[in-house]
Length: 369
Image 1 (cartoon, one colour):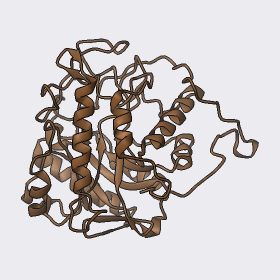
Image 2 (cartoon, rainbow, N blue to C red):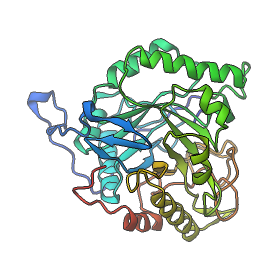
Image 3 (cartoon, rainbow, N blue to C red):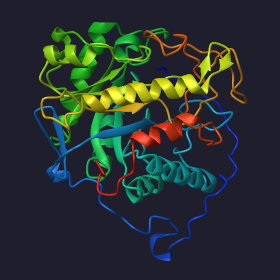
Image 4 (tube, one colour):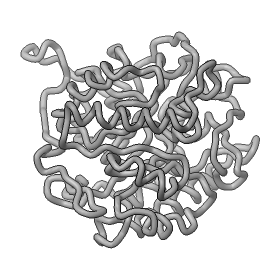
């Protein structure tokens, strides 16, 4: 789904209810990261066939797409993890607590988390990060190098990600005065791979494609270790897992999947729950952590919280029913109601889908992968 927008200003959010403000530690300059727990032994993270081994065990990626734009804000300026205030840090802590209670072990963002205070919270709550090292065509390679250098040794960093359904948006150049075209977009993927490998030779590199790529594209982009797929196709992924097996021996994950909480213009949270549960159960059946013969390391449900900036015919200060996105379509209406996808609302009230997904993603203490 599209994540680029014009700049916008946003008010400071109130501290979320039910979260106690962390006490400052004088030895850490007032930061709240009082306990540092490794998430990944970086030396043990490696691919083995279609499995992603983390700390020596096949990983099950139970992820959420997290793009916490505050009410009234735009993406990316309104993200609460960019230059966060004290209230933002409280909201981030609440998000991570609720995610862990749900059984989430990985966050997928559309901008990299670079603030040290937020990175400390990622580590404190033992979350993995899919790092969007390059999503936007105007990002230069100097910035890519800086991001990789900063995050390559962070214990939460799981993999580098290039693009978000870039076959549709050509790194968000479509709609600008200088669209890249597919050949230039592919060349850019190769350039980013080379840039990453000049700084980090160890962590896997992924790219996220809208729907299934061709065998020819997979072979051309041979430097990609894992493929992410954004797929919206009702209540089932159909034969896509089986088709993936015929395309490549590399693993895949669902970069985005799920359903919004509206049926055209009517709120329909029951249909959202039905779709997310059905799709998640289907992913669980194809996990390579269950069998090395399976093709998927997991998936990232779209998305954690509602975003109010996405309907360009509406206002970022309220929730509107419109919006659009590429691809086929979500259950039940095949319509992308772009501001209604959250497992929780913008003020973090859980929808029924949160509780239903929690039944599948039980946060078992020993299953941290």
